[in-house]
Structures are given as structure tokens and as C-alpha cells.
Picture 1 (cartoon, helix red, strand yellow):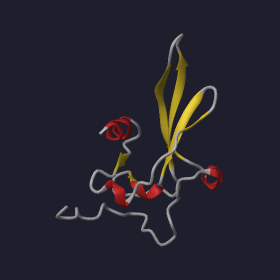
Picture 2: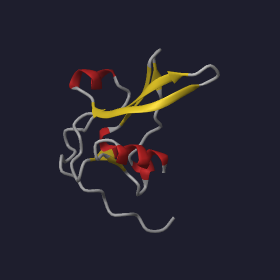
Picture 3: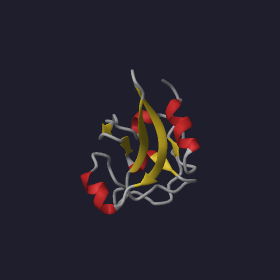
Picture 4: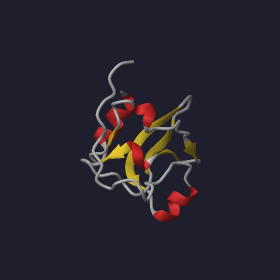
Length: 109
């Protein structure tokens, strides 16, 4: 649910809530001295019913305190084509439909 809150907060993007294991691979958090970020597969995100072309980056500013570090949400954006080449997250595949509503929820377990 935490991810839903972050996505709703930024840019009107929303993650898959129905069967997320179908769309989202494990996300690794990368960081440098000032910021941390994670990239989300393009197929796991929609703005309305539109799938982005490139992965989405969720960015956090690192705020250092004497005994701990805070990760403050700093933004969400679609990567550029050049950034997407270096990302471990997947871009939209050519055969994926750009306007792509979520598939119906699976019934059962």
C-alpha cells in the first residue's frame, strides 16, 4: 500500500493493484551521496490507461541527521531514452499497446 501512496502523490501515476506480480519485478534501490531512486517497469504503470514508453523513476532526497538518514520523496518522472538504456527496469516493448487498460482481475487464488 505504501507504493500506492507514493504513486498517487506524484504525477497521477498509479501502480498495478490487481495482481502486481504479473507486472512488477523486484525493484532495487540505487543511491549516491545526495539521492536514492528506484526505477519501475513501464508496463507496471499507467497514467489513465496510457503506458509510458520508458521506465518511471521514483526519486528521494537523502536528508542526513546525526543518527539516521531520512528519504524524502523528491519526484516521479519518466526516464529519457538514454537513461532507460542504463536502467535495469524495462521499457515498453514495441508490441505493447500504448493505450492499455489494466487486464481484468483473475478470479480464484
